[in-house]
Image 1 (spheres, rainbow, N blue to C red):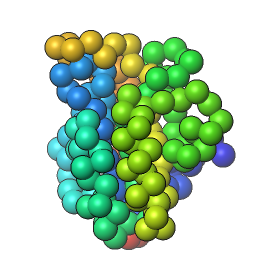
Image 2 (spheres, helix red, strand yellow; image 1 turned 180 degrees about the vertical axis):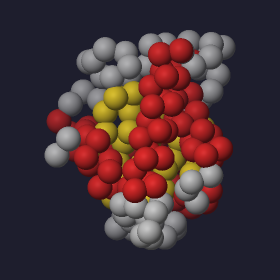
Image 3 (cartoon, rainbow, N blue to C red; image 1 turned 60 degrees about the vertical axis):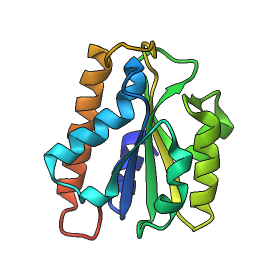
Length: 166
């Protein structure tokens, strides 16, 4: 299944979107930027849009208690691909089949394990950053891609607005 088809399928079910990253480290702020943009759109339940900055482990238990089937982490990722490359899939499968690593790898994997213990599925929507340099803003390229992703999520969620999805 292609990544965007999988994302559409995941968003048909009750899903919590979790932005991870540090806004002060350029493209590492991708996750929080996407979530804040979605909050402004007001098309999704605000309670299912979370920004956990660069400490996802601090939110493992509150996330695991959410009444959703899926959790989608949105984060910058390091992998052998060009900057701006977007990936989406099961976090466990992405880690197993490639050299992918979140910029918060250890804490993200531990957080996912806690959440998966409650029967939820954990996914990763990631982007390869151009820069994670401290004190720099989100790059124009990553901001454009993030805005496109927000548009896709908006489109997918409007297509399923009659169900109990996000």
